[in-house]
Image 1 (spheres, rainbow, N blue to C red):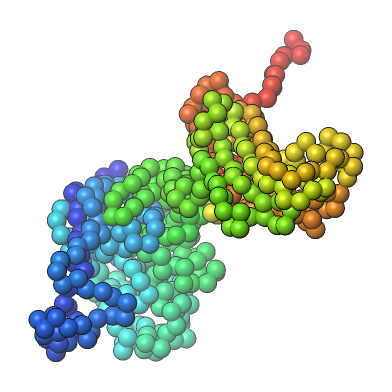
Image 2 (cartoon, one colour; image 1 turned 135 degrees about the vertical axis):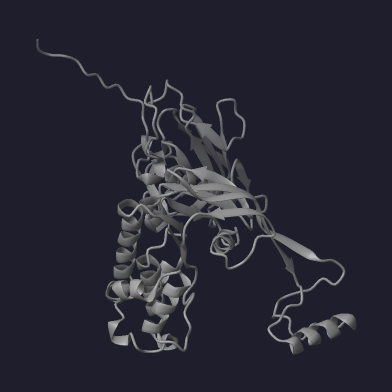
Length: 449
């Protein structure tokens, strides 16, 4: 397939706090305040200027990309990562600070609600205006008019000024125009989130048709990972203006979501030095939780075949209470960013007759859970600690219910001695509902000649 977009050494720099208001009068106000060392009267609330230095921010930092004809190309990343800036440069809304961007074919962009619409013009007039902007003749637009109006569902309001449209109507009409005017490249930036469920379904189908049936290119920015996974054949992750990942959708999404949880989670060991701040009640409080490898070292990342030791230290503050400790594992879904698949393990309290075990005395205790290798699947796991007071039901007698107490990650190092064997392809990950990946005996044999 031929290359339709080629980006080389692309930089976009913004200067923070630079004078640039919408009127000469305000610019002069700000300049005169700066000369006198006074506060800028036009500064936004919460915005601080540093008069001694000129602050700069790199919205895009040395981006190099090639997009092929027919690609559905996803761009994901945190807010402020540079996604919208990249699309604005591709759409020629703003210019790069340095670097080159080569685009082959017409681009139709839907960057935000109401983009390209004149508020005083009617829906019909704006359709023709957008067609002219995209280099189409009036006859070409007229041939597509009925399709656009039907897709957008705005027939009743076609001759109404678009300033009276709701945000959802803006999006529906904007997408319909962009998708039906036959651009070689369709650029969509998150705006579909404004539309209702039925319109989103239509829009997804249209983007699939544009790429597969019509062989055109789609660039899509979205925080909806399921949408990205469903539509795209290639996904890049931007992080602080840099290209962090470029690969298949599943790999890019997992690395992006995994990065979120790696940054937000607590890894290795967590201690509560101050008993007043420790999770717990009047009978049991937590002291620490950690994950260790077979050498007894604090560790936060394990391979599939490694044994994992989870140690939980807790203090018993009162005598003569029976205590059962539950340690739970929850796998974080890379698809939905939410817990997906979990299991719980009770400590050795359950070895005796329920409710008749020897009560605990005051002191420091440790619960150790050993997780064998070749059991858990690849993914990020969060630990739940839940000591409770038997013989009552745990839900009514827990002392601590500490979610996300600690996290650890299991990675696939493609060891052929694991359950993978010689299988060379991606395995369904733990966050997709496949929580365990046990290595179990499975024999296939011939039983008849």
